[in-house]
Length: 402
Image 1 (cartoon, helix red, strand yellow):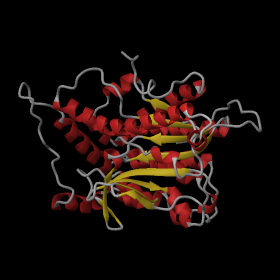
Image 2: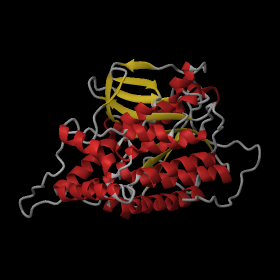
Image 3: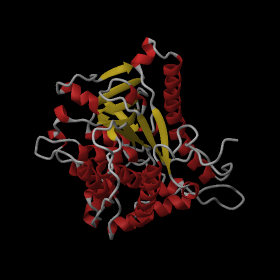
Image 4: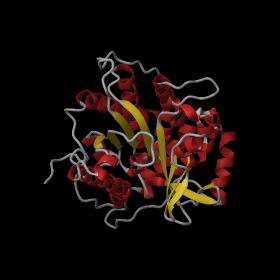
């Protein structure tokens, strides 16, 4: 699919422009909304040059989006110098390949998504759900099915995330780290020790001679590690569907449980602390009413797990902002800068209607629906930025504070 940039007003030459970091929440195929938002952000950079993208972060499906943008932007010693157009193309091509292709993959998607939809249907009066997909990813049945899929016509990248990442980023081992200008943070959770984990491109830059913070354990329940494709795969490892990702003796699951997505690290140990942090929120902060059915409860639990962990980090940023104002002129204020936090979110009707099961709908039509909405929402948001868009926490929800 071709993505044609629109003509926009260019900022005056030589004017200072804000430095921006964009953080992408995880949420399965609901992240298709982020594809559209990121595409518009990148096009705005190309056409209007009003801000500089100094960082991207993501967890789970948001990590896939963030990786593709970052990989398209960074230079490689193999020849590609990276560009906004390359980032747009890489992001959209990856997700076009991620969705189910006609044939075996479409049938498999219909079965999986259909089974999850069926599980959300309660038996009348009793309030009991049918359990259909209660399979263990470590069990023989799942492994046997995976072994048969290629013979049935399914592409390896459809069911093997690590393979797909390697195919999408063939020159990951040839990145010109000395010239990288954009930081990437990927959130994951170490299973055995329960350590909050961030795979950080700054660690790779330190290893290649740049004067940035090296990989280290911040304390025993929190760690920063070098960025790897395995780390991105770990961020997208839901324990109900995929075995834990093993990296250097550790076992990793989805980052939903710890940081969705990582943002705190942008404020410390990096070459560029952003002026603004934009959160692409795909898990709604609010619900229209109290969840009552098992499906509604499961959906809201999943959203809360990601939102509450994120909000704690954002609230701390607001606290630091307040301290920099209170201690203006003192050492603390000189060592820290004010960071404006903003939210880009789905339309309220879309957020209210989506359910947990649709996070696993890998159909092309569903992806395009959310991708198109993401572009439309981001286009309006960017046209109003910065004067006519809100700031966190007021812009995280859909309704006025009551």
